[in-house]
Length: 290
Image (cartoon, rainbow, N blue to C red; front, side, top):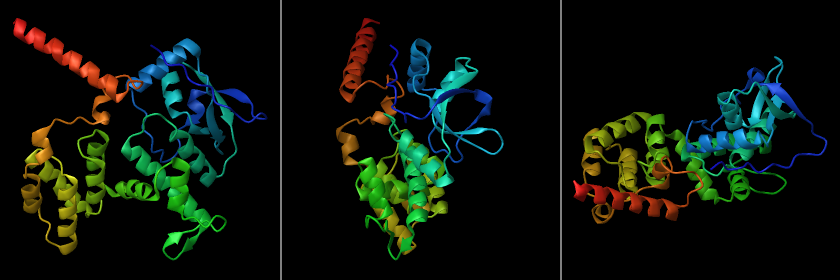
């Protein structure tokens, strides 16, 4: 069932015009992924039924092209459906203004992967840092007295500490970030691993392949301490990861990020749980009938 887009409110003096798809360019260093997943299918179904209700937000570039601020997924969906033009609102924005607008508009999406949020916060942090200046231990907004991290936290509904964790996670190598996104590795252990040097993170990948598991928070903290002390080796990582985690003996855990690949984005965790149980009952019934 198609999910209808909710029309956004726009400034009254802004006009909606149509622009050819080939004149639209992806925002530089855009941290949000555009994927042909279940959410994209729902968006395409919505566009088929209602059209593009929310115009893309773009800014003009010197080469007669337009850079997308908001609407990368809508552009992709329209292209897949054979659209030649899409409705847009053109805004003249400086580089820093464009980054803030792009990040804030995309953070409103229903589902965002940890890596997307991490790099989005990092981009916004860097802009605020440039605008507010540096004062000893943190970047301060001279009007509000708040640090950059606190500003981002207040605007996003996250604690400053959590924003810091996300930003720190951008230090992970891409292969480890992917494991966080697909739910293979937990967020809090990943933050601890992000403190390791790149070469040690590469060894971590090898150790994880060897032991066929990912670190718990306590294991990641131990490895971080060993790294600081200069005692972290591949063998040590393998030995730590080979330890049996008690909670893995007691229960089977699936993260929402893993399950959303198989269910509509509108499903709640409880709906997914019920569906899984029904599938298992059906499987058991077929199994015993053989």
